[in-house]
Length: 305
Image 1 (cartoon, one colour):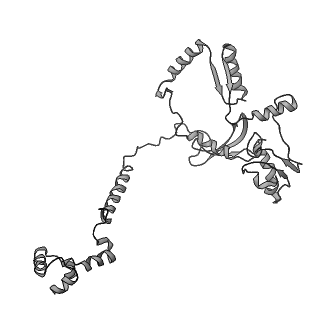
Image 2 (cartoon, one colour; image 1 turned 90 degrees about the horizontal axis):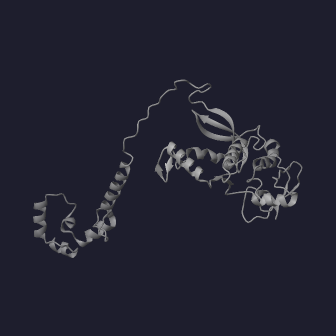
Image 3 (tube, rainbow, N blue to C red; image 1 turned 30 degrees about the vertical axis):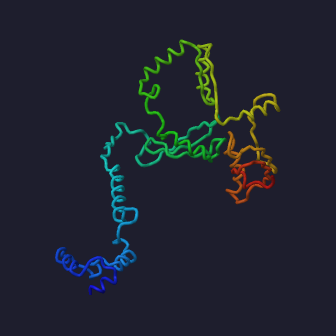
């Protein structure tokens, strides 16, 4: 037996093995395991990697899994915090035509680039949740665009200010009024707005400008139609907004203009293009000549470049 263990590369003699068996009192699968022979160690690494010796990096698999389990447990602790308890308070006076759980639809208008887009908004318990086009409005005729659908997110923007701030710090509305009056009294006020086409808002701003002669009103849009207005001025002599009628068009030439996506009548123009297909599955036969460096919604409609 000692010779057999020595041939297998035993690190212990037979007497040492006997002492180890008496001292440990454990169960062994064979004398090779007790003697820690080289052949048994190779078999252990090859057949039972989980019970093998530590990796060369110094971290064995079991230790690695312990660290991973502890990391996941600690990450889960962030969700184990007391939740705020909000009590549902019923209406003191229930609004008319409001039934909890049933949507309410109302007509409104959204502005994009200064142009009104008729919409029908779906609301649940006073919270708007969905926007669709108003079929009775000439600009949308029951359809909507991606921009209209995304406008609902403005109401739930987490970065939207929930209180009056002054230089990033909480303030009060009365403080704002005092600061605004002081700034107006000093003169040189500048009003910066988006494109305003509302008669009511425009009249209020004009009234303010009439009271303060040195005040100026500036309108700016990040995506504007200045080139279109300049072209209309050069052709017609005044800043006009072109309105297209594709009812009888057979050839449409678009020079880097997304008229089916951008502009005041984009939704209506797109509806005119696809409306025949919606009812009788016959696409309107338009011949598009669209030189453009990028793909748009009109790209599949192109016949020539």
